[in-house]
Length: 316
Image 1 (cartoon, rainbow, N blue to C red):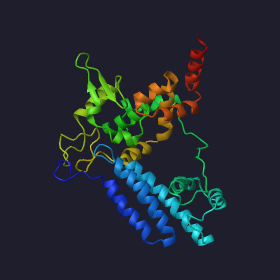
Image 2: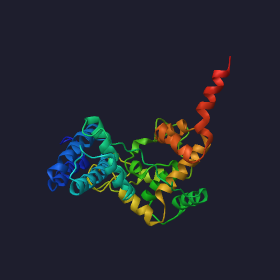
Image 3: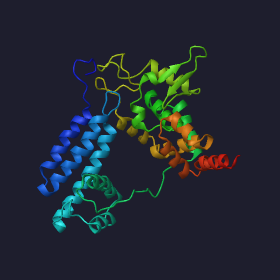
Image 4: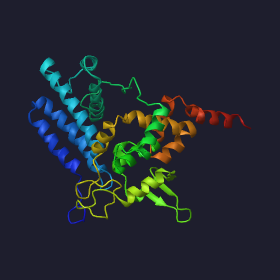
């Protein structure tokens, strides 16, 4: 596939198809039928449409598995306890299930949204789940971690670069692992580095620019089949694939870095300096996500659009 001898096929997608069949095999028909409809007509069709050689299905497949698994648990309980199915489930059934277990049960919401659209069950309503806490580290901790990644010896160069992309640019490690080397560009006149994470390149400051250049010149795993023409910033050990995100996550967690907290604090610092739309475009976030983070961080940018709109209306 890497050398175009075979058509591209996402490994996560192919394994997901097998996983669905394995999950359905042991279920009673009353549970298996609605789950199969949900898994194949909602998740599998959507993931097939979005899977491309440049966009791995890992994240969507992982989320889909969680939702399908929680749906199976609920429908199996419903059938075994009340002899009711997805189409005869009541609001009380769902409320009881959600209130007597962990928050992961909220994942059945997508199933009932799909059931309503398909006409299977139009009676049940489940609101969006809102997390009660938002992990974060202090700015001093973030700066200390940046110093460690830039100058320390606790990790090898590739994982230090990945950690800096998380801390400096608030990049999720799933996205970091899938970065291509051509996202890095050099200005022919000034020699300065830029990296494209969103809609336009953003500057890479020193001393990270020097560290990133060293990494580009000495990328690991180039002798595992991909060769020096590997497009990935972090080539994996398998031919044509980038480094698995879990590998980076495990290495950085082993150092004691709180990954979500580091990303949230990094994003908060950017939002403290610029409006959410500008931060979103620069770092590759949606505007909606940027505004939600801005609101959670208590930044005044969330009111900027309304204030500007009201002022323009009052002007003659």
